[in-house]
Length: 255
Image (cartoon, rainbow, N blue to C red; front, side, top):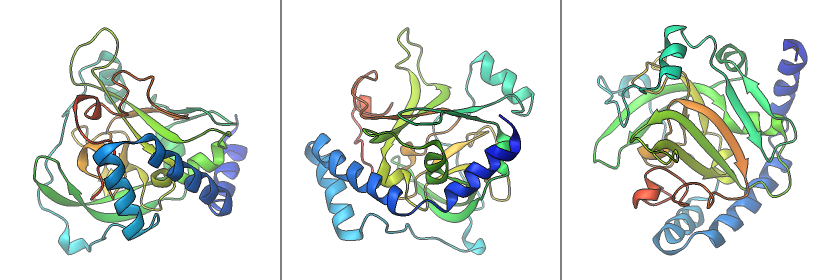
């Protein structure tokens, strides 16, 4: 694939984040409400009813940026593959986008940095009880999904990460997360490669992390390697849609 058609296709996709994306997101919203049960369904329904699907998380000014922003979760993946990528300044790293898409993609960090970006200063709320405000820059996830083209049946974006929180033969100890297409196409949902005007550090998820600003910190998956578009996540490990969800946390962690 040459760079020019690749860039043009993604740039054109930015103009398509309208009716088609909204239709996918509305369909995903309805499916998510049916699929979830109990408190998770109540939280999802209440927030989207009261705030609306496109409601924005509060954004702050430069003066509000926290002087210290704690590292949450893994501070550095232990795998040899990740170490090799980090030593090469992630020049060989690629983000895969596949699953229920018409045009599977592999994008380098350089590819992502050439695309239209969004910068937002938002508050990160951790389930452990602390908060911090940071400035994030990255590519809107909806732009990439529009360029990839969603197949009928697409409902969720599943994020596979490089960090493994516990050793396991079946892969269930590797971090993963998922969101529905409403949040995937939300304007503040970005794949961030920069924090506070500098490239992400390893502790904060280099080379790429998810920012889904209307949810708690454990949804902000770090060390992204692959995004799969799927019709569900029940087949994955504990079947709850994320590493911590498989261990009892809510799938929809709205704030």
